[in-house]
Image (cartoon, rainbow, N blue to C red; front, side, top):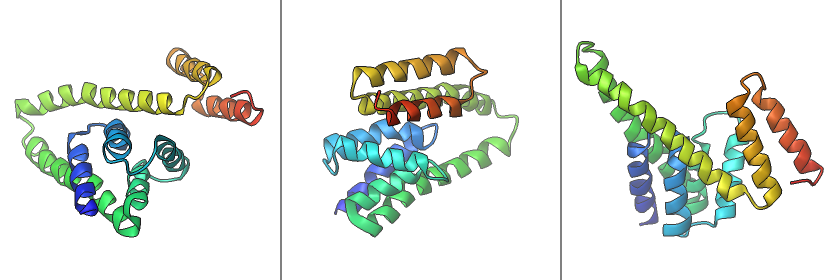
Amino acid sequence: MTLLWLFIRLTTISLLAFGGAQSMLPDMFRIVVHTEHWMDAQTFADYFAIAQSAPGPNMLIVTLVGWHVSGLPGALVATVAACGPSSVLALLAYRKLYVHPKLRVREWVRFTSTPISVGGVAASSTQIAILLTQSLAMLGLTALTVGITLLRRDVHPLWLIAAGAALGAAGFV
């Protein structure tokens, strides 16, 4: 029953999330941690960190959550639930919208899906920042990093990551 519920929950999130795995995170966090109590917030944050540090797609978080819930079958069900139905929907939408370039709904979909995607990713980023911020120093570092990223296009993100890692290794955050 848990596998079926996992499939239903992740399929629903996947079909409603614009912006990929990142935009699924707030709802997945709410369901996995608060609604179903399959794991605690720290475990979810740890899986998120593993998924972000591993090479490959950001969908690894979904597989790790499935693994935690029900081992290998859970990992497979979670991955299929998050990728399968939304991929089929995207393929069907592509075939309908892009094979017929004169459709006005095509521009409407492009115009409306962009802010939805940006909002989903912003909500996800905020959720993870709140989840991981455990001190005032971490909050300040997060705010500073966001500020630099938004205001200074000439600073490469890897420098910010390296600075955060150095501050963490030195025990400042």
